[in-house]
Image (cartoon, rainbow, N blue to C red; front, top):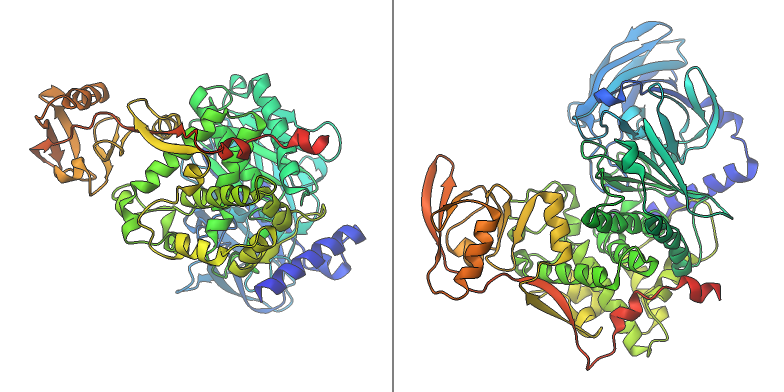
Length: 624
Ligand SMILES: [Zn+2]
């Protein structure tokens, strides 16, 4: 049934492209949607739309399962002020008492259109800041329940705040006093084509010929939009590297929709022809934020192929109500996570050392993940409905969305294995070409199963891929899958020098990551965010929620703790902590003498440097 869905979507998109116009019957079903975003900076957006209906019982549905979020995350709590009417008369509505996203009403005789209006309110600093905002159409519409979202047609318009500019993959038809009128599209395509808007706007062109690739950026300040020339060059290279890797594109144009703010619009969400890339205000120039920005751009862009075009059958649903199944997220997100590291390195956005620091940090984090002793990787994907918002407290024991990072290590393992056994003739690039390439097409969804992944790997290089994946993903694996590192010519080592990627993580979280030494992650104010239950901090009795007040008799500071860890290396005396637990305090003895420890990769000269081969640029090789 799900495979059939993808075929239908392909036929529909192609039919519309070939005909150029919608059929009369499709037009008769068109929802006319007008969105007034003039108050977006106050976190309130007004929406009004007309739905063609027939008299009788009608159920309207608010999008619940959001593509790319893999979960029932439609922000139903943000829908307020709902009103239904027809021919100027109000229509009473009643929420379903089991399915909270469904609204029932009775359409009176003689009525052919129902008018719906509501406001979308959001938490401050989520979708908007004072200077920019994000328009997500799924927050702004209800549709007739049980209709396939491919078959619902929508003609949208958008009114912006005065002086603001906008960008979207959604094609503009015209502009008048009511704002921008967009071309009629399916509900699926509408939801897949969000917009960003803001007072400070800048467009960066990434390709000078052929189809459009651009970065559309809005920032809290004009200065935030100043990109370094070498970053722009790297991003242009990223487009070329992706094409060299996959050998085909499955979009008509591509837009990175970047918002730069420390107070709103934070995001990372993929679409066929665009991505929502919400980053900090300094992402274009701050050393650490730039590393993260390149990762995000590589990741979301790779999703156009891996996730949007090729999608696990369980994640390709016919509407926004049917539950999604996350089991194959180790491909959808895991392979994308891997490519989100490889592509920036091939593009020059990252140095080879940046790449290795990420691989080291990921490997160390997963090796020290105590939850891996009880929970197979696949369970973190199956449980996706609650893993994204799962709390930081006890995360080391619980595990979270490990199909991203552990998935990336498994794909590195597969890549190195193919390179090794084929004497460098083949690589995971060959898998990507077969699985995600083909010929250039407009957006379409081609679903796959576990067997399809195994079969394509076998087409590239015959091997027992089924066992390879089963042991790493479906069974409890006490150790992290680090064969890609060790067979790739490198060793995971620990030194007292901070790891770049650990610094990036600390910068983002405002944390102090000491999980590799004392086995704790702390907030900058000394609060315990998480502990590894098997290491020194937890053995001393520390737990998430407690707060360190003093270290060896001195008031808490990050530097004081670092100094104490270094000093304890040449001593047998435990580090003494006074710790707050609610309204009580206690003394805790931290018996740790291993010094500062951070992960890095060290070259193993006995083996070929296959990690170096993985990040070699391919764009020149293809161009030649
Ligand atoms: Zn992703």
